[in-house]
Image 1 (tube, rainbow, N blue to C red):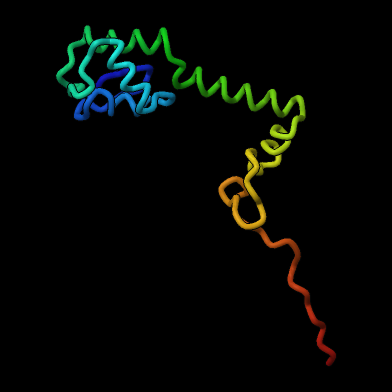
Image 2 (cartoon, rainbow, N blue to C red):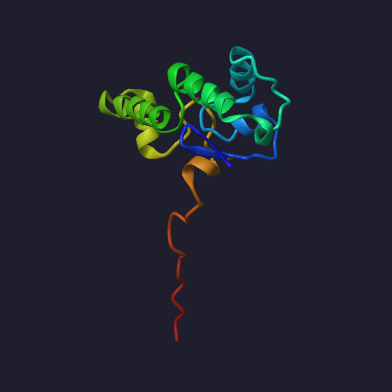
Length: 127
């Protein structure tokens, strides 16, 4: 398996499809990488030479934020929102949807598993 940006990409797939396994590289960027490095997007990774793989590695390293660097940037941005206590930061802190979605019926992904609010009311029986 070839290593690109610290991630092992599949040898059995086409180059542009294998690049999708790198965090921060989507379909458009994967095709752009192939275009800028003058490699065929349909070439299988196992058929590429080391020089061609080095060309891909170098292009990604110099031009695209991927993996750890990208994750750290996103984390810093969210932390800044929390620190300045803006609306979006408060929503992140509370674990609620950030971009205006309703919370009455949906938002289970952000809110987590539903919990009952109060206990069951006991009726005391007279004996």
